[in-house]
Image (tube, rainbow, N blue to C red; front, side):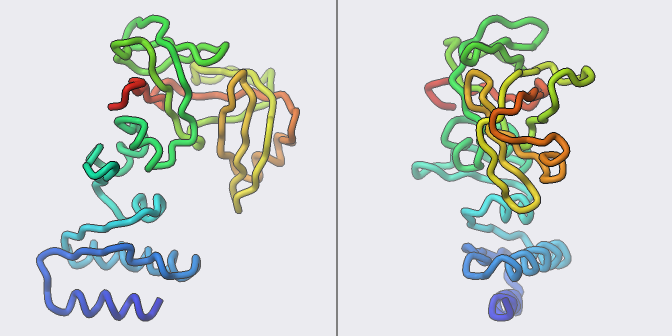
Length: 223
């Protein structure tokens, strides 16, 4: 970590007009990476220096970037604000790069008032339009946008309510990755405390809730 700080100081000493950072935190262990990530963000903001950061680490991209360009297959597939690219990938390659956990084959079933109905397995989901031209598409959404509740809970504003059963649980530090069988596998990320409160375990019946804006429809042929 100290060597990385010295390297950054050396790069800044020449007063560059642009800073190129190629995987600057990749050689560090997790605690050092987290500490230096925060220092680097503060440093770049403090000096007001434009920087181009190359990374394969999604957390690093979210923490350090203002705008994100996704490079896949030798060309830029999408460019925009970091949060926008993560939330609404332009095509399947971008969805894979930014780690969209749920990419489900779907079929458009109609559109009304800007809301598109799509069939996924035996279920129907509502997503924001426009409807894909050919009807066949992928419904893409992130695991953290899925809310898990007990069945029979109070109504919520989430339009998509899918009954299912817990299929698998994988602890990931303070979070738990939950796979729910809703007639198709759906992945959710919940806090460990929520998983304990809901007594989640394989076979337990649950409801998976998902708001309409969280779903991105991508044509089967790509972007």
